[in-house]
Image (cartoon, rainbow, N blue to C red):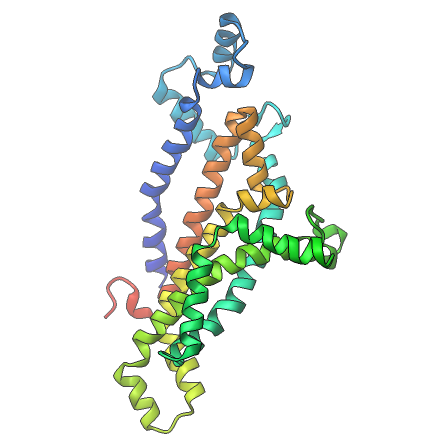
Length: 316
C-alpha cells in the first residue's frame, strides 16, 4: 500500500509542473504586463521600467520562473500590493469560509444523494426510480445561481429563518456560523447531490445484478445487508470518484455563491483580485486551488486502494 501511495505522489510531479507553468504565465497574460497591471494604465514608461527592475521582470523568462518556483517551494508566494500582506496570508485569511461552505455543502449532498441513489437503484423501473432520476436531471440542469436565489427568497426573505447574506466565523459560535452558511451550502449541496445520485444509482445497478449478489440472496441474507454491505461496498469506487470530484468542484467553484451571499471566501478574494489586477494574488489563488483539487483527487485514489485493493497497480 505504501508503494502505491508513493507512486501516486510521484505521478503528481508532472501535473504540478504543468500547473506551476500555467500559474506563472498568468502574470504575463495580462495586457501591458505585470508592472502595468499593478501601476495602472496611466503609469509612465519610467515608472513601469522601474517596477519591472524592482520586481525582476526585466530578467530572462526562464530565470524568473526558476526563481519563482524556488520561492514558492520555500513558502514565498509573493505579496499583494493592494491588501498589503503576503499572498499566503491572504489565502489563509479567506480560505476558512470557503472550506466551511464546501464541507457543509458536501454533507448536504451526501445526506441527499446516497440514500436517494440506493433507493432508486433498488426500486429500478418504478415511480420512485423515475422521480429520483428526474430530480437528479433537474438538479444537474438547474443553474446554481438560480437555485441559490430561490432558496434565498424562500428561507431568508419570505420566512426569515436564515440571514439573507453575510458570514459569521466559528469564533462567534457554531450555531451562528452554520446559520449564515445553511442556505448557500444547501444550494451547492443540491446541485452536487444531483450528480452523486446518478453515479450512486448507476454504479449500484451494475453491481446488483452480479452473480455474488444472487448468491448472497440465495443464502438467505436480508435484503438490507445485501444492498448496504455487498452492493454498496463494491460500488464504492465509483461513488468515491463522484464524491471526490464533487468536493474538488465545491472548493474551487464557489465564486458565484460566495459573491451572491457575500461570504468572504476564496471566491470573493479572486473576484476582488481580478478587479484590482492584483496579479500575485490571482497567481497564488490559481496555484492554491489547483493544488487542492489535485490533492483531493490523490486522496480519492488512495481511498480506492483501501476500499478495493484489486485497483492497486500490480494487484489482481
